[in-house]
Structures are given as structure tokens and as C-alpha cells.
Amino acid sequence: MEIYPQLNAIKKGNGFNENVKYFKCDWTPRKPEDYLLSNVLCLHIREMIELQNAIEVDNVKNVLVLNKADFKNYILNPDIYPQIENVWVNQNIVLNSEELKLLEAKGFQYIPREFFGQELKEAAE
Image 1 (cartoon, rainbow, N blue to C red):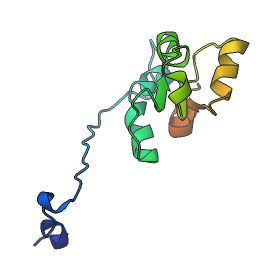
Image 2: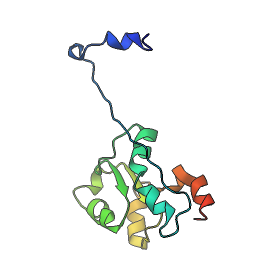
Image 3: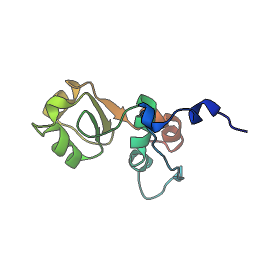
């Protein structure tokens, strides 16, 4: 029995655009002893942002800043900065006032608190 038989009627040659992306789940210990949980969660945040916003984090229009190197490569890059529409920033990066102004101009959001608030509370972060 097919759950969605109408999908079989759609042929690729009939102008239907296929758009499929696969995500793999893995476990992260909730109470780490030798690292910050928020930093580990940031390594898996791209998929969460893409799923929540139905976008591709391409580091041009939609930028993910996990560390100072990312900040330099994307935010301080004069070829990329004007194209940026959305920015998500690791909450553990220390920013000076000039850096913060650049991010505020783009309406940035801190991560991973927006996705993993409960987990971070449990780990006392």
C-alpha cells in the first residue's frame, strides 16, 4: 500500500523540481566533563537551521558563524557581507563593539540557545 500514490504520478520530465536532502541523527552526551555542550551542539546546528527555516545555509545569503575564523571569512569579507540576509552566531564567541555592529546590521541570532535551551539548562550552561 502506498502512502502517497499521487507522488508516483509526477514525472521528472513534467517540470517537477525535486528537492530532497537527507539528515543523519547522532547522540551527544548531555553532561560533558571536558568541553562545553553548547560548542558541540553548534557543530550540528546547520541542519536545525535549514529545517526550521526551509533554507540552505550557504554562507553567502545565509551565514553560520561558529568561530572567529568564520566571522573573518564571511562577515568581514566585502564580497559576501552585502549579500547576507540571515546570520546565526555561536553564543560563545566574544565580540567587540565594531563586530557586534556589523552583526546587528544584519539582524543576527545567537545559537544554539534557540534550539537547545532545555539541554543547556540541564548542563548548567
